Image 1 (cartoon, rainbow, N blue to C red):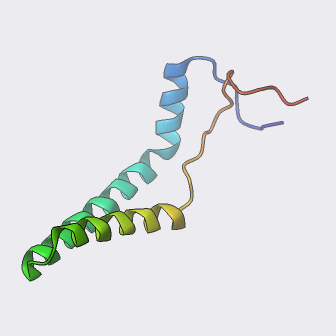
Image 2 (tube, one colour):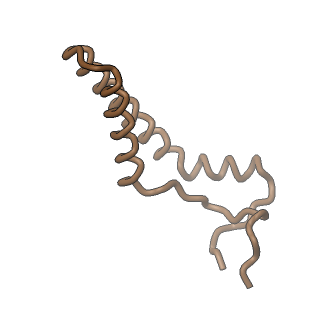
Length: 84
């Protein structure tokens, strides 16, 4: 059984989720935006193939998403099946 509170309202679940993960969402967004800006800047300087830029950006985002932990739900949804 989960130790998280059960929240029935979707609006309240969203607020709880953003309150719990808001800082991580902002940090992750800032890191990914920085990665994209740096990659684009470097490729603009060296004037290389555009498809390689897209591949490098995609690969960087993919690697970042695999090495960072997932965002957590601080609640139990009424949509989840009950564990007996």
